[in-house]
Image (cartoon, rainbow over all chains, first blue to last red; front, top):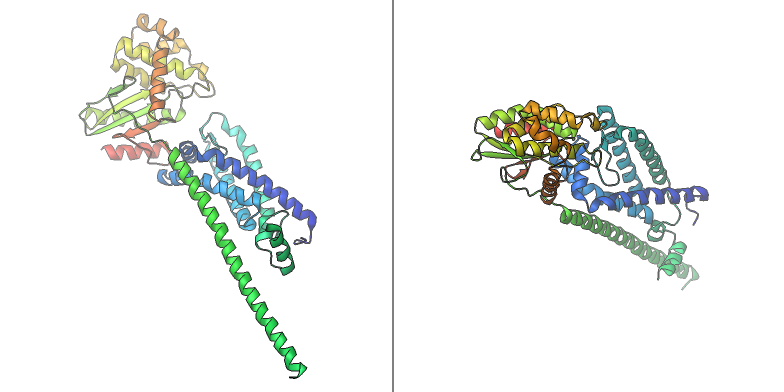
Length: 170
Length: 243
């Protein structure tokens, strides 16, 4: 499989997929069983009306989980990477916004959330982390194929390769 | 038959096979995409289902029926409001500033029956929530609900920051209690000695049992009220409901 023509970049892409994907799986998984905390965390940003905050608080962890699984497995990789980048960009905007407004909250990134004294000191680091993950997501989105992705099994187009992969699957 | 037409027949057959192959390929692709999408929808749906099953609604006792609070207004008012709060929580302080006067006026007009239920949510930050709630319980027991409500108001007016909760000493609590109308001799020893620690624990347990996980939690006529983006929005919307 020499899809990218740049083997090193394909491996870097795999690493970026795994890192961002695992972050999403952990972030989503921790929140799915704690919906009230999740809703509360969204509400604490004071950006969304209450009823919308409730929907986002429930839907976001599920989205995070599925984006994470897609990235780790490498299925619909580019779509998942774009979604991942959009989410990270949204979080960067959210954290910057509370920072600018002087609101001190736990970002609720990995469960928890709500007001927290002295939380502002964590904002620069949280934004730096999300920026790095945003960059990793964009890298994955920019690559046609990365290593060890389910996409290359599912959507192999060259007949010879298809025969080989089908053989491997059965 | 000329070899020429044989060749063209072979070519045609090959083209048909390729076309069939392409069709199978396209079909397989569509099925694969549909399959993956289906699995994704199942995961999202399942996750949302798990979340909804784990969601706990706040089911609190009606205003006036808790042993761990003070009420203002008459119990037969058309609306009831219950406010769960922690004396250290800054949003509770904001809510107090935004609603106290209006709630007091509406209660006096017979439009609403309000119960304030302080409990300890934030003692992980410092012991202030326990000390303040204990002091509140002491004043409630020794000097009655009217003085306790006034003391509650003074505690919020003099709320320490979460960064420095120790700036409010036990001595300051006693002074505020006296300012609210308590007799120093009645309350000093019990405030300093945390005599109502059990009351604080029970109030906190009751809040937890009711599903209250954050402060301020407002219940309007038994239902959680959180209509608004900010505390000020919420306060304005709450007043609009009550007027």
